[in-house]
Image (tube, rainbow, N blue to C red):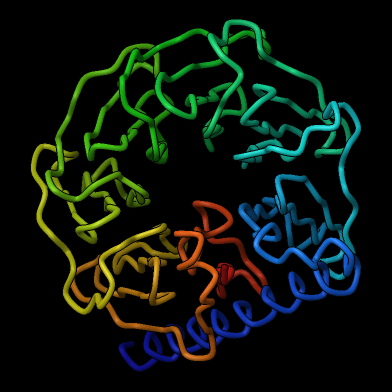
Length: 348
């Protein structure tokens, strides 16, 4: 049993390496082959967002935000189409979310135009700004439990929830600090967990309508990621990534936390995801600012580095940006078969 598990893990990690390299290749081809003139100013060509269709195995669909523009691929990244229909010529898009339960529904936030919604897999868009106090929006997230539960955070403060009409927002949290992470526990349509720039966690038990402070992780900077166990209703476990102090783990739904940094050589976390195949032995993966990818096969107790073959870029330091950006989705999507999972960790 242990031997089989180690082989499965080894296969998983090898697959991660190949996907990391492949992801770099398709971004390289996109930037260098299709847009040579624009690429003369290299610092502007940062791929800031990657999202994968929940049915990628069937439709081979990917989205990226590069230079603030939205592009879509339906052939696994071999070719790209810039999406402009309904986007008002916008070029400052900040966050994209695809509904895991209805791939037709997407939300896109902008730093100058508010929020857009698509109901046709991202081909066309329309604004949904009713109820927003300003149009500078930084984060949007759709619940995997329902395409109707959507949260959006202002670039600097405040949190909004979309109403039942799917087009009107209501402010649900008057935070003075930027909301930096959102998580929806599985099999629970009502609970939501968020984190902010100062390291404070909030929890909602009514689908985001009301919030209470849960815990503050001191001296860690912003909360950058929240990864919830697939067995959350039983084990009450989730991991929290921070800007400066690595990873923290709770097994009592956020009442208390303990550091989970054994094996981490870089404590500047950019994202954490969990394998959906994880049941008895939770497999977590974490990307970091400087050192790429780490994995844990024991629920976050011990981490191993898996960054062979990926390199850093000096311009990331010049622009004070992370060398390795977040995963394309909170659920690691299948790339080969139902038992093998992988995620993209895009170099700067």
